[in-house]
Length: 305
Image (cartoon, rainbow, N blue to C red; front, side):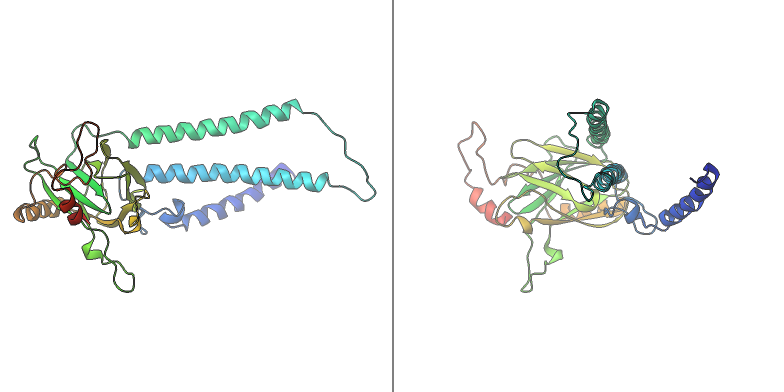
C-alpha cells in the first residue's frame, strides 16, 4: 500500500501534465469544439457565446464523469462477481439494499436539479431584452428566404429601411451563390434587438456562430437581444423544417463597424427601400377574423421566392 507522501508526489506530475495539455488547447477545443470563438485569442462573437459554451462544456464534463464512474462500477461488478469454475445455481438473491437505493435516487435527482438550475439561470440572462437598444431590426421569415428591416425612430416605421431576399441559388454543381443570399448587417459592440416574425409557417432563426436560435411564428412575434463583439462574416439558416426547400433557406450575417453600418443604411435609403414592409408582403392572411389573402398575395409570394 503506497504511503500518502508517495501518492502526493505522484499527483504532482499528473497535475502538471494536465495543465500543460490544457494550455495547448485551442479556444475551440476548450469550448467543446463549438463555433463562435476566434482561433487565436478566443474572442467570442457575441456577449452570450461564452455563457452558452460554458454551460455546454460543464454539462459534458459532469455527464462524462458520471458515465466513467457508472461504467467502472459495472465492469468491477462483472469481474468480481462473475461465475467461477465449479459454481452452479443462482447467487444469493437480495431484495434490496436501502443505502444503495437512497444513493441511486438522490444522486441523479441532485444532478438533474443542478443542470436545470444552471440552464434556467443562463436562459434567463440570454432572454433578457434591452429596455433601450441601440439598434432594432425586424427579421421576417418566408418560404424560403428572409427579409430584414432596419427600424427607425418613427412609430409607423416610415423612416425604416429594408432588404428582401430570395432563396439560395445553386449552380450546376450544387454550390450556393453566396452573393445572392439575403444579408443581415449588424454593428459591432452595439446593443441589438431583433424582432422575429414569419410570413407563413413556423421557421427558426439560427446564426450558427452565435450559438443560439429562436422560433418564428405567424401572428406571434419573438425577440432576441445581444451584443455582437467581433467583426466578421457568419452563416445563418432556418433550423425548423418548413417545407420542400427548407435547406435552401440560408442567409449571411456581416458584423461591421458603426460607420460601415450607417453607410449601409444610407445605401438602402438611396435605393428607395424605405418604409414598413412587415404586413405588405405577407404570404398568408388567415389569422382569426380575416377573410383570407389580399389581392397582392400571389404576386408578392412569387417575388419572395
